[in-house]
Length: 308
Image 1 (cartoon, rainbow, N blue to C red):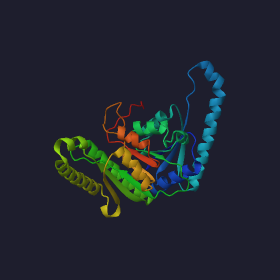
Image 2: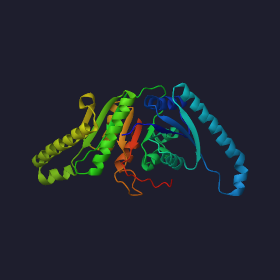
Image 3: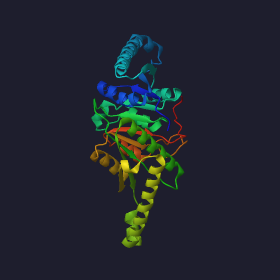
Image 4: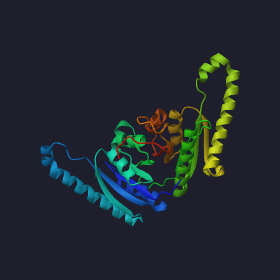
């Protein structure tokens, strides 16, 4: 993958300022990337009379936001990170995606919405829309001021007979590897496998036949995982591999919590080039359960439905 040279940081909603500075500095400070701080406001109303009535309010809002963005820029500069400021109006997730694509950014970063916690979710509606619709890698980070990102886990699903999944798995592995190296973090790799309709097969084919099938399937998945890790350039002796049998929706969040993972790197789409199919049910379920920062990767060729 190419270096992270351009970062778009969406400054939206209520967020923890020390956490924002800490997270952006951790990435941009090590990569030397140029940062753009993007502020988003609601667009002026379409009704002319309402526009006139709210004109002063809209101007005041954008002025306050610009002051806040410049304060953030100054704090980042003190931390050795160069940043510029940009403002946009519109639905937050649409404005962020448009700015990211138009500016050819390598990575989109955003603090997790604090109001999402009211529903026991780390990620809010804007976060989930970015995970679903952004063609660029999206890093939504959990508020954790001054906390070092010590553990990165890649959830990967390589399948030798599925070119698209294998290509995405390779991309996710490379992103996870580079981010872990950038942060000096311990790298974990997780691969889950399972036998579909195992219960039914046991009743039809018998336990002995199913056990033989499970053993063969386990060996194949381990071989695919080892090959994918080797092709990504990751040193298998320097990582922790979690190779488990089980359901991804249940096990990814539980393993991430048990291992105290700070950043989960995962693919979030199963098909390319099909408007309307942006995120798989498994990924959606995982994102609604995890309690750590997430870096979501799309496959090459993914097309967003957002008009740029």
